[in-house]
Image (cartoon, rainbow, N blue to C red; front, side, top):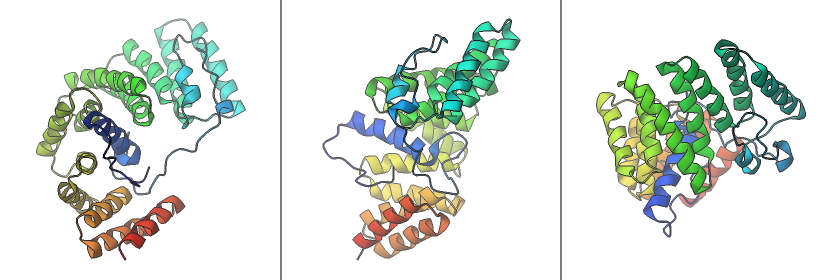
Length: 293
């Protein structure tokens, strides 16, 4: 997930936009990270197909078939048994309040095994039972996480569309919710209207020029379109706001290297490496530093 060969010249604009949207969220622009995690993340640990549920509906009316093919999902035998028990409990629950309580637990358990679309489904049921901006955003955030890991175009469109629908409900009640607006903007980047996404991110930065998530995502989008000068400016702003942003420092190094500012790039890479003990990050930094010689 680190930017090894970020730009793929043979890709079309829609592919680049879609990849940028997902990369930005994966690398630090996702739920509750504000685009500036203090530690690097090389992504969830892959699971084998046997760690999944085999694609059946589990009795909840929600299709989990895509989860069996999702390399980021993993569940132990105990976790699968707990999920199965909770699904039965959900089906047997009487009344909206009882169902909401079980649905909330189910969502958290699905999040624990990184099945974010299933978590989104149950959080949406909770929000439908007791509507409110906070409830809608929890569901939207879960779908947004699923969107960020999706690889198949059909899944990207479906999950992005679901996140957009729910973020729309959030912004209807809280038009100044910048986090929801930023994530909404990123889902548009993987849609047929990417300029709407850019416009939303610019709105966020107009309201809050120090917004870390928007700065980060705008930087990633600039990288995806080969605009390294613009990307470097975004990442410079980001690390001014948060010098401990591992991903900000790393991508600053990448973009500075692409613009020929080798010594500045070296300092940014070393800063990223000093902020995290992640061996994958260290390996990527060392590879980038070797290119600067």
